[in-house]
Amino acid sequence: MRRLNLGAYRFSVAWPRVVPDGTGPVNQAGLDFYDRLVDSLLEAGVQPWATLYHWDLPQPLEDAGGWPVRDTAYRFADYSRVVAEALGDRVTHWMTINEPWCAAFLGYENGHHAPGRKDPAAALAATHHLLLGHGLAAEAIRSTGHPSKVGLAHNQAVIRPHGANAADARAARRADGVRNRIFTDPLLKGAYPADVVADLADVSDFSFVLDGDLKTISTPLDFLGVNYYSPEFVAGSAEGIDPALVSGDGDAWLGAGPDEVHVSQGLPVTHMGWEIDPTGLYDVLQRLAGESGGVDLYVTENGCAFEDTVSEDGAVHDPDRTDYYEGHLRAAREAIHAGVPLRGYFAWSLLDNFEWAWGYSRRFGIVHVDYETQERVVKDTGHWYAELARTGRFPER
Image (cartoon, rainbow, N blue to C red; front, side, top):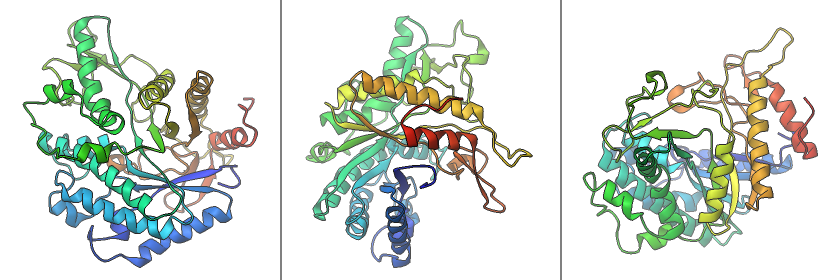
């Protein structure tokens, strides 16, 4: 990272590594690992940014019901205090939860991520308790007395209607409700959106919301992390749409009408199948700048997977990835020029990594990893990114 001119590194602390049972005894060896990591980063002149929950819940807590159970939020606050007390003398920027939508909906509603449950009511309870856990963790971090800035990383989606008709607009409103506003309204406004509660009345009565919860959830943010990859387009029905463009994953969003569908726009895609459209990042930043009342924003994830190979010359030539980054960083610059308080940008990711349900089959890094030998090769995009970080200007290509 020092050679790549990177000023900050975002990493995630594994809860099971620090408090294996989710509560109770601390595994000091696990905590010591992060202690050494932070010291090494600072010695290299790289600012550490810590995320406390990136979807790895200690198994005993899942056995007790997981995030749909209220107690998990309290245990998360306890764990957060342990980590903040140990590292807060050197770590000043904290993200409590990474992408609560993924943890709640991919984990408990459609089963794509661990723990693989398919229970819509549990997903809504998990949503609330993840948000409550964020608020309680923010209080715990600040109670240590260390100088701390606290936020979370939210994967705000860009939901656009496929067409200009009323049915597509209704579909977009509903999709936006369960992807975005069910999270951002409690965080930024201290309330769940009434239309979303009404859309989901047949799934849950929201009785998991107790007095004082929303005040805790809406504790002021020092910053808001924004994770963005691709826009989503939705339609009121598939009628008249090329079947090849209609999403075939079989998953409607919670609260959707019976015929509402996701629709591809025929744009270029990454190896994840995600369409590439940098204007979505601009729209996300503009929207959150307005809704948050000017809270500092950071792009905490943005990047792409492509099928990389090491060439005969020993390099990894990945022009599509460089194009992706340049397009999205230019969109970020446009947002800054338009007045958005965007203060920083983190590429996802530094290294090729374990990509949850996809395992090691998708490569996001700007540094290639040979998983057999662990050899690292900086990709062409990594060299381009390093020059951009050094000069603050887009390199010639």
